Amino acid sequence: MDIVYNFVFYYPLLMGFIWMFGSILFRIYRDTYLIKEPDIPGNPMVSILVPCHNEEECIEDTIRYLQLQSYRNFEIIAIDDASKDKTGEILMNLQKEFSNLRVITLKSNQGKGTGLTMAAMVSKGEFLVGIDADALLDPDAVKWIMWHFANFPRVGAVTGNPKVRNRTTLLAKIQVGEYSTIIGMIKRTQRILGKIYTVSGVVAAFRKKALLDVGWWSNNMVTEDIDVSWKLQIDKWDIRYEARALCWILVPETLKGIFKQRLRWSQGGNEVLIKYFPKILDWKSRRIWPLYIEYAASVLWCYLLLLTFILSVLYLLNVPLPQDLVVRNVLSPGWTGVLLAAVCMLQLTVGIIFDARYDKTLLKIIPWMIWYPAIYWVITAITTIIAFPKALLKKRNTLAVWESPDRGL
Image 1 (cartoon, rainbow, N blue to C red):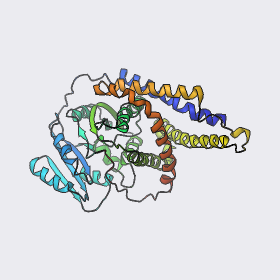
Image 2: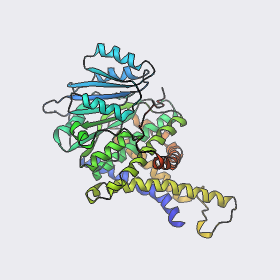
Image 3: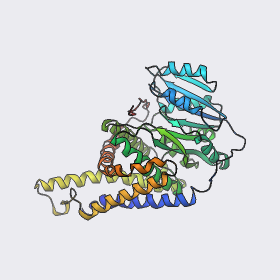
Image 4: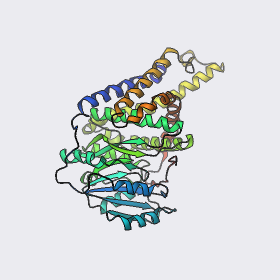
């Protein structure tokens, strides 16, 4: 039991140091290769894809903000996936105003993956940028993304840097730090290691040829962004992280909304874990092994955390247990818990300081991040424990339809 207990406490500690060290290396070696605005040779056409489902509250702001892009050779394709509100009507009115906007209307809910694929097939651009319907894409984002495609022919996708814009509640403020530290630091570290677990579905760009090679987006995966990331990298395409490609997003502001969002993310990750296991065994896929092992270890950590907690409660209730299964101090972890919390806060602070280069307001969020471990580690563990059997038992050919998430509006 000591091995399990040590893994539960020291695994997050180890990963925290890895994410911090990887981010430092990224800052030194990757984040300084381009310090001025890029010049894109040939100015190729870019198609910006915006999938929509019941987005009447935010879609007009999103489309209007896209018109501010400093990279001027682009079109916008909005996919109205059987919305039941005024989304379609709003898009039709905007289409009359903006000549670079096209609208695809689906009569039945086909899911985000299907909508993106249909838009990609009719797009004029060789490069595709996908954003969510609530996202405000920074005016210089496409230009920074296109620099990677223009200079590196093996780049199949570029993931941007999501930034939270609703910051009034405690949960929203915590997520501001999470996106800048946990998510941002992980992507920086994974970029140093050569493989990225997933592009950010809210802001991700693709080379159309790469998508064609792997069969476009899957329509039966809960998280099409995670799936397409693995398809591309297994097919030897490169994925880049561009911190300057900012995208301002709305996040859930209720525990219920966050739980539903993280459950979907976790189920999608577990579906990918199961789907690509046979391909991972191939020696040609060896460069992605560390990514697969790390995610599998994180799933194992969640279940062992649950086991440790149950054994600790049984001990407190004086339930007779074999000596090897006795866990006395999980609810009061002593110096190990203090060390873990200290490293967590150090990681969050380092991440915010790095990302403050792009968003100066992040420094104000540091005091709120003390709540991060208490809320999100619990949510992550619970959603993973629930999501793995859901992914395991899911019918493989079921169409993955979607609904608009809680965005704290």
